[in-house]
Image (cartoon, rainbow, N blue to C red; front, side):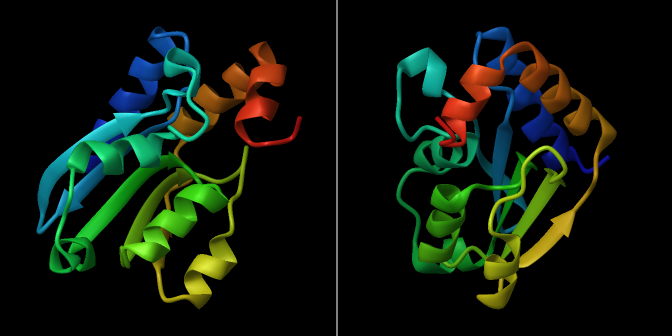
Length: 146
C-alpha cells in the first residue's frame, strides 16, 4: 500500500476513535508528506473541518508552486467544498480511497484538469459502511442532507 495513503487511513481511524467521522487525508508536496488531517466537525463543533480542509489547514500557507507539485490523499471522494478548495489552489492530483459510499463532483474535477485515482479500497468502504449504519443522522449532517 502507498505509505501516503496509509497516513490518510490512520487519520480516518483516529477520527473514529475521537468520536468523529472516519475520513482522513494527507497532503504530499514534492514527494514528501507535508500534512495530515481528519474530519473534526464533531470534535470541534466545526461547520467546515472535513478531513481535506483540516489537512490543508495543517499544511499552513503554501506557495503556488508547492500546491502545483502536490497530491491530496483522501479516504473518501471529496465533497463540493473540499473539491472547490483543491481547485482554488490548483492541486493537480487527488488519490481517493473510495467513492461508493459517497461521490463528490468527480466529473467536474476531471473536467477542470484534476487527475483522480480511485482506489476502491475495501478498508475505506468498510469503515464508512459501518459508520453510516451506526450513525446515519450524523453522516447526513456531514454531507448536508439534513
